[in-house]
Length: 524
Image 1: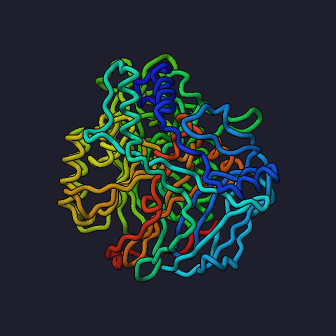
Image 2: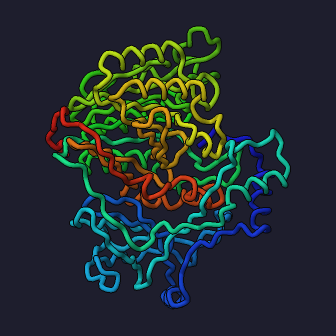
Image 3: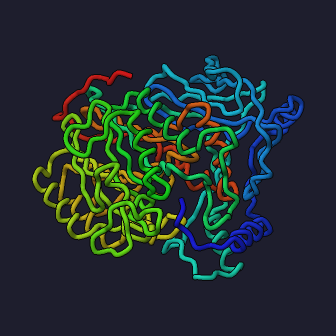
């Protein structure tokens, strides 16, 4: 996530070491003896099976094949086994004792498997097993995290005992969930016609070269192997390609489009996003338009590398490179629309901290805009998560999210505006759906980062009677490889925090959108 934590290298090492000594190791795979024997005989160890996407007519499974079993976590990257390319297929059916249908991966042998099962019936339970080299793939194991009542709060210089206590709290449930339980029930779409589809993405970090660092050079970061394109480029290209392939009419990008807000990073990010379609900061988005909001990585900066950019009024020494590329000065609220639905982009960034805030001028403008047409279906997006539930379950602590007073004010405004139904954010690099008791009719959704594991975007499909949400991992071969590599971040604990539950990633919500326009599927 960057700029998020204050742990030192020694402290994180101590946490991992002490956690292992206290019995907090989580098995990396759940092979039974017969499967383990078959894997050993074949010299191929399939692992990390995940049920990622569940739609009304299909589901997606991903996994990895390697030369050895998955290590227990927490672990060092050097412990991960080497990749080995194999076949990959999925057996499935409505009877667990009769998996008589088969879906095969496209593109030949690979170590980074992605199989889409399609043509299924809505609201139907299917059973499945995945195989490589005739060995059944065990599911990725995800420890269930339990957060302190007041959120994660560490003293300035925590002792090893305090760190161990925190780890013990996070893993105190002792529950380990399966990322692929072996059965899945397809969604039932809302009533009425499908009207249009919106892609939601965030945290591209164009220009970043090392992923998974908390501070300085620890935990061990992950870099793209020599000769391959930079991973933020790989992942952003894959995101735009997949979003277009899956029928997205528009793309909303909720911040951290760059790594350090340098001019060259911002220019590169726009060139990549332009492959989806044209930038629109006002008016109608479709077909294939996109709009962006700032994240903390895109905020004005200080230093000689920024001095050719616009000086920030009232902030001596700060320079803002983003307006020259995106024409989006800090604090600017955007208004766009698609098919009659309104999209409002917020700038929740500050000058020099990773936490979020909304200044009075922008809040007054938001209040005015919503008040002009309070019943109009409206989706708001901004970088920082809003709800107390989000803040209290953020690894970096409540202060990493939107300022609590600003969040309270925003939720009250949403409660007074019947048309607001959805708030999209990023920043935490995870899939998590939360709610607000104040704005009870609004869904607050954090979407996992585009740039690293699980590496993708969400599709919001709008129907006359509501909407569906589905998270999709980016599916190009380079993207699949990087997603698996970066799943080892934070000593292998990253998936437990970022993947989210199946319900976070895939769900249906009823809502009256009968007044919106139906749009034709955009051409590829």
